[in-house]
Amino acid sequence: MMRTYLLGRALWLCLFAAAGFVCFDAAPATAQEEEKPYSITDGKVDWYTYSGYRRYHGECHVCHGPDGLGSSFGPSLVNSLKTLSYDEYLEVVVNGRQNVSQASHRAMPAFGMNPNVMCFVDDIYAYLKARSDGALGRGRPEHGPKPDEARERDNACLGF
Image (cartoon, rainbow, N blue to C red; front, side):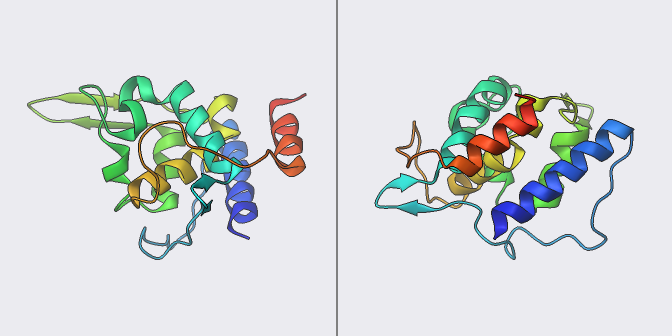
């Protein structure tokens, strides 16, 4: 299942980031080739996508705007994820990014050591990908119940 694959990769990336280096696949998939990391049934998103909505609005929306639409501080992630692969997304989240030109200087900090981001990096990706694909509109999504697997994952990652 995609969720287990993504979570395993995110945890390894977090561990590598903590050690001071990051390892990525030699040939990352393009955004168009990736399996959808979200599920929407009868207008309700899966728990992980809802968790991504919550975490995005807790950590990312300050710069990237509500619902991933961008602001004067950060670009629209709804547009960015139309072309960014999962690997490229992870690299930016873990290591940050600087875009410098004569007209502007934009910098995204590295979040590789922030457990409030890294423990939920796949959930945030699922939420933003659903927004980018047009499968999820603006605002707080309705969601299904939190699975025991998610509760165990959250507690283990956050050290509870």
